[in-house]
Image (tube, rainbow, N blue to C red):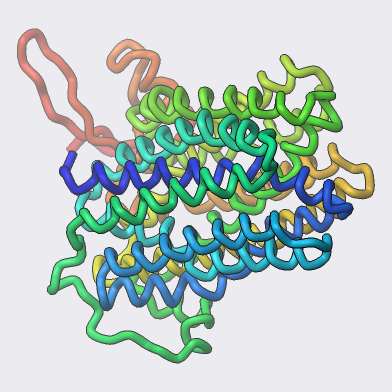
Length: 455
């Protein structure tokens, strides 16, 4: 692993932990101020709504000026947002305090370029065939943050100074991240820099027009569409989950931290073990599509159980889906984008997912406020099913774009074992290059599935 990857992975951890601090705190801050869960969902949506406007501009600028300056700008915005969030503690009047909290979410969103630019940074320094492993490690690190962040948020929010304690902890984490970013080198080489930067904001926000100008636009448009559906599904779940822990499962506000602890443990295991098993057997595209296919099943099942053990078991299945989808989708996207357009492609992707993350919390919060918690999970399942169908219909296109061959249906259980047998039952395509042992020798061969002879 290149040494330049380590600071970005550490950046992922401290940023994810900072974001996780807010999850067990914000719903109860809103309720304490006397507002409904719909207002909570609007605050959740404020961040991605602001990010929608800023992400393509920051991504294009990162291709022109470099990754490091944009990472510094975005992290400064995160630090400022936590200062604003803490300032709301000292304001008398629920309306004004809520307005300041909303402003903190908007400021963080406007400078929210960390996710897309960090992905572009990793794509600069990691070879294409290693990106899934690095992105899975990123996911596992986010899982570690999920273990620490909500518990720390619950603890700090339960202190005598309330959510001000959470703001202080998060601001300290953001300041640490700022210091870390000053130590990383620039990853964008001179030959891969964009020749110019379009400063017209209307051009920058024309996502469809900009996406169509990208090299390999048909494939990238398909990936952006899948990403949109995945993030609708993910946002629907994450918005409702923390409320459902309390109202549907009867947990106390402090006990929700234990649920996040379990979820973080699931994510670490699935990113480090489950994902690698499927990626080795199905490849990036096959793993992505398999994750898309199991997610609607898990979301539909979440609407049924009312006991904590059953809910955790089904959550594990959903967690498997997320663990298979997110790193492989990011890997396929980076491998499909031109190196000179990496930041722009990531910026468009972030804006597309920001749209999803804006719509979904509002819809989920509105359904939940009407007493339809299970309906939120079923809505997510319907969206996930559309994503699965799109993924299945795109397999050949995506494999061709990244030069990945499909496991062959002519492989036998005897020759290649049960893992390969599973792989070619779950995948589509025309051929697969493989290795077969003959005594002490290793033979390289190609098996065809269209009735022809091996090459």
